[in-house]
Length: 194
Image (tube, rainbow, N blue to C red; front, side, top):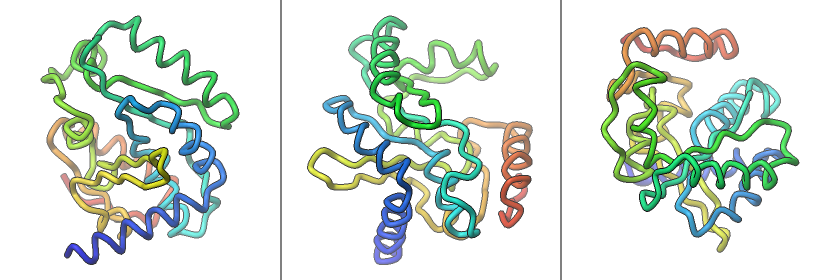
């Protein structure tokens, strides 16, 4: 199993490296260090799905999600400083970048989504709760040019074009709303039932 995980990680890195947009993103994101951060799910997963289905690598990508973790200051003002810095840092990219401090998500999540959320303890804790096993994925290219990949449910579903619910946070309605949107863009996906 570890060998397959390693092979799929290498395949993921190779696929992400083929995208000029993601290359620029990963390089620019190195400026966020020493903040712990990941580039998250959507643009990574969609790039892999595009490569697997023969589409242009940036097909279907509408934005880029970057998460970071700073539990020393949970204020909106502190997060907004990072957001404003990111606007400049990523202004050369063709997609908007959404950057969020995962240490403060619990402060607004219930008001926005109607679901009570306990505070996350780390970036990995946040990723563990994302909506599907394939999208529980974060990646970064460290300043020493070593890749760091976090995929708590592995990469088999991602490369198998399989979408399964991760019931840690979402409900059935949210799951089917997301899968309906994705299956219109990628009809090759295998959508698991709730």
